[in-house]
Image (spheres, rainbow, N blue to C red):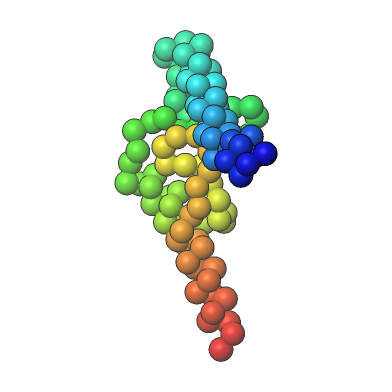
Length: 103
C-alpha cells in the first residue's frame, strides 16, 4: 500500500469535526423551528450540553464572551454559532497574574 493510499484511508479529523458541527447546528435550528414562533429564542443547548447562539451578535455579547477578564470561566458559548469559544480577556488576565506573581 502506498503512502497516498494510506493517507486516503485515514480518517480526516478536521472533516469529522466539521460534520459534527454541522449536525449540531442543524439540530439546533430544527429545535428552534419546532418551538412555537413566539417562543423561539434562537439560543440554548443541544444534546444536553452544547451551546448554540443564532441571535445577531452584539458588541456587548462579544465583550462578555471573548474579552471579559473578570469572568469566572475561561471557556464559554460562542458569540454566534454552535460550540464554545475561549475568553481571551480571562486568558490574558490569568497569564498576567501568573507572570506578576513570579516576581
